[in-house]
Amino acid sequence: MEQQNQIFETLSPTRLFFRCALPSMVSMAVAALYTIADGVFVGRFIGSDALAAINLVMPVLSISFSLADMVAVGSSVQIAIHLGEKKELEASRIFTVCSLLIVGISAVVGVIGYFGAEPLVRLMGADAEVTALSVEYIKVYAVFAPFIMVFFAVDNYLRICGRTHYSMALNIMTSLLNILLDYLFLGVLRLGIGSAALASCIGLSLGTLLGYWPFLRKKLQLRFVRGKIRLRQIANILFNGSSEFFSNIAGSILMIILNSILLHLAGSMAVAAFSIVLYVDSIMASLLYGMTDSMQPAISYCYGAKLRGRMFAFEKRVLLAGALLSGITLAGMRLGGQGIISLFIRENDPALLEMSLRAMELFSFTYLTGWIGVGLSAFFTAVNRPGTSLGISIGRALFFPLLALAVLVPLLGVDGVWLTSAASSTLTAVMTAVFLARFLYGQKKEGRPEPPSR
Image 1 (cartoon, rainbow, N blue to C red):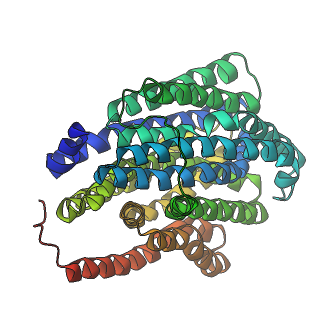
Image 2 (tube, rainbow, N blue to C red):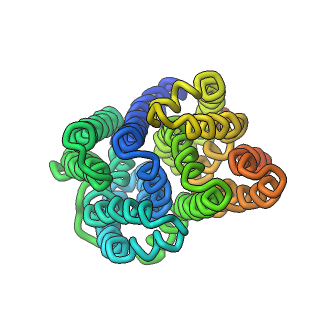
């Protein structure tokens, strides 16, 4: 525990930011690359219908993973706070109970997903071919659910214990394995869309095993212990993770709505075009979420240890880095969009290229303000303000996008869909600024004597 105190309590905020954020961002970026590799291999070797199929079922998969993510995020906050309060045994109990809880939830989700995939996909209104591809893809994930949904939780637990480089290596290993299996299954053996899902599941399953290995060896602060935690504490964990849960749920519901609107306005080609944009967006999103997630243990620890100055210093660096990354992404999408999009489509599909390029140009405006909501939502989760974080998440992921859709689509048609994310991000930024001002005012009233860290 002494080493963890030294890292979170005495290391300069800038050095700690780079020490925690860079490995997580690298690992998340590599993870996004394997998602993009799925899109490139599927688009080139199977076709645009397969791209549309994956985009249709991705919200369903996100909803499933969000259940595990709710427990993972909520428990990570509580674990870090307890470590900051020097209560290691209680932190290990939370780690043990929540790991088992996620496995149990995953098993139930897998059964429901396997048997409910076909009727659910049919409700989305896709044609028979796209429906068949979607069902084949999602059933593979359902079979592996108990082994893969816990992977993202163990990644959080490793970072809490200071094993950021091990976490990075683990993510890189699983991502590279997935890319190699994608190439083998799709590029060499020319198997179907189910093999793309199988490649991902094999990599994540191996990642889960290797992720828990250091805990099983009892070499880290957290370890598997006997005992229970109070139901009230479990409720707090679920509530604290509810912002990410409802954000994922809201985002997934929004994606289902967007896909339905695109199918109605322009058919499966529009869904395929949107999926290409989202593949590219996933790199930036992974960097932002990797950065904010990596700093959550440090912020939560300092909140528990009442080191308010350091807590705010960490968040300043998160927001500054988010603004810089978003500016680079905005420029990249607008200047290099055609070259990026060409990776995902066959040469004889100029219509899809044109539609995807238009979608990317308009979607890129999201990065003017999108980083604000992501950075501050994670901050409010880290300081045990789940209600505020939940409000930001639901506003960003569902309420503001639906409002933007209602206004923009009747006026602009398909272009209104591409601009929805940018409009909702701007509204979210305004709302989070109000919440932050209220939080800072509350901290000032407490009159903490500690000077701010620089």
